[in-house]
Image 1 (cartoon, helix red, strand yellow):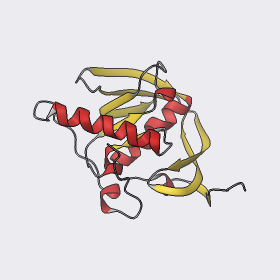
Image 2 (spheres, rainbow, N blue to C red):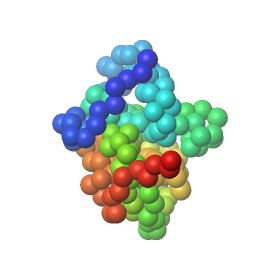
Image 3 (cartoon, one colour):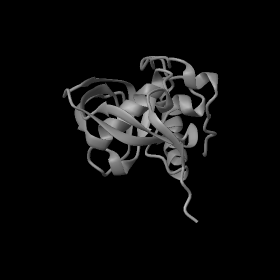
Length: 162
């Protein structure tokens, strides 16, 4: 089912999302939300989508199969945390489904170490670099109520080719 994507300004986008309590959460509802988020992300041409962007202030996000670790299945990360694994940062252009048609350059860590849970509640622990590391940092910001426009330089509208 396609979900409505919240856009700035919306108070849910600016809240720190709550941790998911794996012991008490309804796993069927959570799996259904993840499936709907993935469908919505693909239809809207995104590469990642955080639960707060669809009105659920919980610490979960999804990542497209094309940018996942193994490139064969989508990633669902629950209660993710990351830390830098390199001192190097890189600038690159970002956009966001919650800030339509606006782009800007954001400086992010090139390599990070990520921990969290997968959709089955299994602990995950991996290194991410390049574009996957950027996606994880961007989506993690959503879980903390931060939008890319808060960090971006050179904000500009989408250039439309005629």
